[in-house]
Length: 238
Image (cartoon, rainbow, N blue to C red; front, side):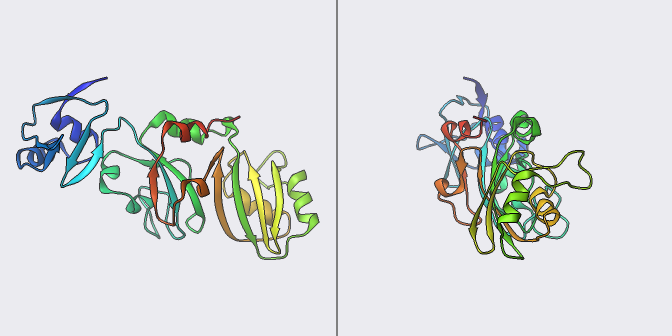
């Protein structure tokens, strides 16, 4: 456990600069346990601390781990160029505390996106050495054939890869829909593999990372939630 002054606590939770947080406190906009906390120098144990700022409750978190159901036409970048960034779907506090996407989904790809302000977590989850399976649902331009599935399972050669890349599993879900599971996390991998197998990806959705499924989270497009430890444990390779 750690004990911090109230202004440092608010700053660490993304409510703004130290000066701004002090002003919030002195203006009576922060309450703890139902009482106005107007002394920014007052110290509190952070473990289990719940703040109310502008009548909204916020539990203290040393780091945040977030799952977002990413809609289409949002960029996984802190400095988007052509579309809104995914951070615009989250409260402003997360921008202040430097929350970042874990890996990237193309602007037109939907589905499960992890986000955090924990650098080691982001690095670990983004590392191709972890071999965390990711489940994608790909809509294809041409009908899905047995040959297509077989080629993706056997491996296809991409022009900038030293060896063929193959799917962990691949299942036909519909006339023009497949479920493909990958571990490598290469750039545009699903789209490039389908192109190499003489088809084309017209829509892509990520449904699962490790054992964490978007369906189990119950999110609608554009919605997000905090991940608890049990859910984070599902991201560890089996």
